Length: 249
Image 1 (spheres, rainbow, N blue to C red):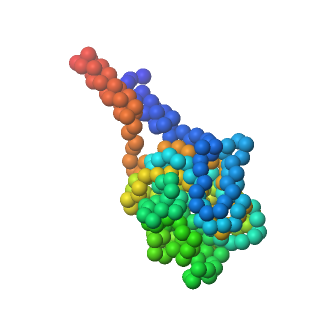
Image 2: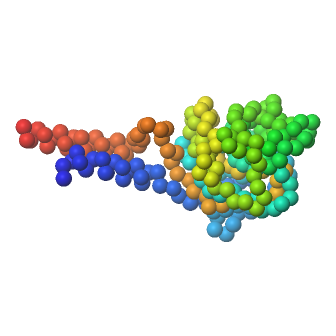
Image 3: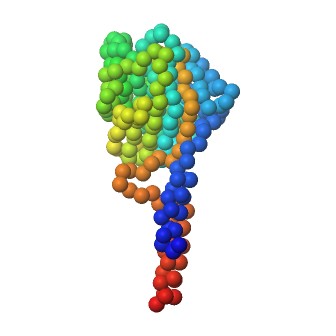
């Protein structure tokens, strides 16, 4: 087989290896924000938050931009109807900071008036510019929690009690994507700061995040990734093909 014919399968194998998903070890993650009880399971791959309290996050502590996170989420109770979800680009201390720039993805079960406004049922993505206060800003996505979009199918539909959902998050400097049960619900372009993946609860107890895997974020549609290692392999193969052609001539 010629070098040219070998190039494509070798390149595809390199891309497949670089994008392979790895299990997430939660033992080094940390909780911040309001009252909460984040309990990591013995396998270190799932976490359970049991307290109904003010906004709280459980975050990786690493810079996760350019990565994808997938797993399962489930509310294991019939009590309450409030917020579950995720933060992206979170930096330590952001929950209480006065100046921030991270992304909040939250999903509320039922529409509810509280703190002088009405928090809407459904899945939404917002930018948090002044932390996650226990106030109308976080409850109703107003002021310092600026709503960017609502989900295409679940924008006004809440989660169900004792129901497990799969989720897939993609987080890059210019694009955020959210899938629920394999269906793309949010696909937002913009400019996003680097920071951690994290889980988020607000006034909702007994929430479990499990089966967590992380991988390199897939490239935008229609492009081909070129990691440094793949580029070097490609250059070597091209040089070999060129040398072979010169010998034949």
